[in-house]
Each structure stands twice: as structure tokens, then as C-alpha cells.
Length: 263
Image (cartoon, rainbow, N blue to C red):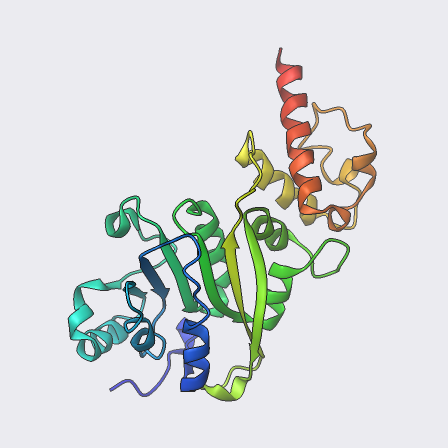
């Protein structure tokens, strides 16, 4: 029997069935996936509802070995689809090959941003994400340029996914209750995601621009882009003033400038 959540793993068990139903019902099937991967199923409050969705094959990955054993006992028919491991380092090709899968979970708050970054890396296979986050993190993910909450996570997520805040969740529906409000969001892969000529430069430029977010891009990026002509008006702005499309344009400009300089 699992009685005590582990603080070291940031465990907070959802115990409200209505909220659990509402979260799992938020999966729309966008992108026509047939598999769904739940991150950190815990005691299976979402899992039991996901297992009932017709035409959808549920998988779960859990970092707590004691909870893996508990889940196997609770859902013996899906025992071979309950995986023990770390989502951040797991090779999901061994599970899905090239098939698409939805991603869902009451994501551990201490690694929720890292979960999204790994999902972005594997976005060709993940057309939809439904996740519960700390409210402040959800606001950063969905924030638009010009706001103080707009940052690295906002740009990287919104470049490839449409982000929608669905509903907020009280701390009272968890055991133990966290000290924060939670928010459930849905992300759907964009049909018109940018065609980046150099994705590595895009990621690096966004991160370096926000690392010195109070400075203009000209000052924030001068060492990183030492060989690039930075006279364009775009470089007079600060990172939080640039839209996602602006960052895409900036990346293309940087790639073109670097290619020209190397000739």
C-alpha cells in the first residue's frame, strides 16, 4: 500500500475523480495518434480513465519503483505497458518506433519545464500534450510577448505548438496539498510551424537573449553573434519585446549573416 508520497520526488497525489475525468477528457486526439503516454501515473487516478478510452493504447512511465509495482497490481492487463524509468532520459523509440503518441500527466513540478523541452525535441511524434503544471509555469508557457512572464519557455513552446489554458485546479484536491495553484493546459502541434534552417541557432539565440533580458539584443548577443551585422532595428529591442515570429526571423537573419561571413 502506498501511503506516504515522497517529497524527494515532488509527489502530490490527485484524489478528485471529477478533476481526473476532466483532465483525461481534454485529450482530443488531435493528430490522429493511437497511443498515449502518461508521465508519472503515480497511483493511477488518470490511468484508469485513460485505459477506458476506445481505440487508445495507454502507456505509463513512472520513476518510483514502488509505484510501478503498485500500478502493475492495479492494472494487470496493461502490466507490460507500465515502464520504470526517467522520462527525461528514456528512449521512446523502443516503445513507439515512428508512431505518434499523445502526452499527458500531472507533471512533477520540479521537472515540468524539462518534460516540455524533451517533448519539443520529439514533436514529430507528439501532436498533442495535456498536462497539469504549477499555475505560474502555465502562465509562462502561454504568455505573449510584452509581458514579464514571457520567456524562453514561452517562445520555444509557442514556436511549435498552439497553447491553450483549460482550467485551474485547487491545491485541496491533492494529497499532500501543494502550496501552489495548478493549471491544466493543452498543446497542439502547429500545422504551420516555422521551417528553421538551423534549429540549434534558434534555441541558442532565444536562450541567450533572455539570459540578459534587460539588455537590448545588440548588447545581449554581441559576444554570441560577434560576426553578425547588428545594425538592423530588431537589435534595438529587448528579448521580451520580440514575438515568436520575430525570433524566427532573427534566427533566419543570423543564419544568413553567418553563411555570408563564412564565404
